[in-house]
Image (cartoon, rainbow, N blue to C red; front, side):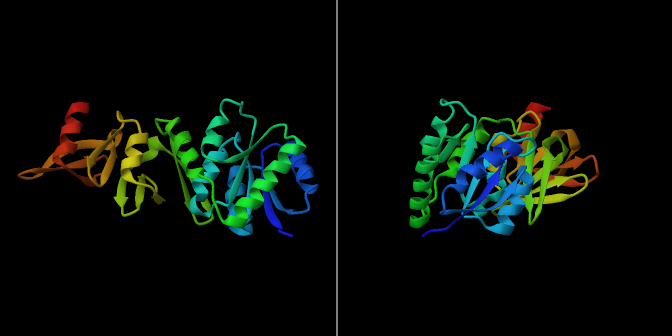
Length: 247
């Protein structure tokens, strides 16, 4: 018999208890832990390595989508547990994702379990990233940046970001107090940020203009941006044109 290690994530104790009781009637499911918030969930997945994550969507601080974003390639098979209405759930069906609608009915659990076993046996993963991308597009402009650094999670308000720098498959996120690395592209970030605040001044840099002090010539055909802390960034011709239009 296949044994499926499950982790339950929900900020409501009664919801966790109800889900745990419902799952206990299926002998294939082995509940290896419960989490009360998204921060606990990310750490528990890394430590316990569940086969499946029963993940509430609507949680404070870090919601279910935030948890999936932070886990990235480490995310196990995810079943979203949600109170979303039927119209909103069409997005899950489009991306072939499984979900349980609160309050969960026993027969729905049985169908979900069969789907889980089938997908785990085949190694097939549903398109979580597709749904995550749609969710992120619905939340433009971006208000905060989520970064997982080993077992630590950082939530960075975008207004505290001085600039983003492209570094291969990552971006470096610079604030006044620290720098962070996130697996992301500068082009995708540019589309999600407020264009009135962040300017692509160079192919490798997105600058938060509130930290700009002045622009100076660097050579005959180039310029630099001098920031409030005295540091400098290169400015391309197209970047300078964008800055002139905005400033």
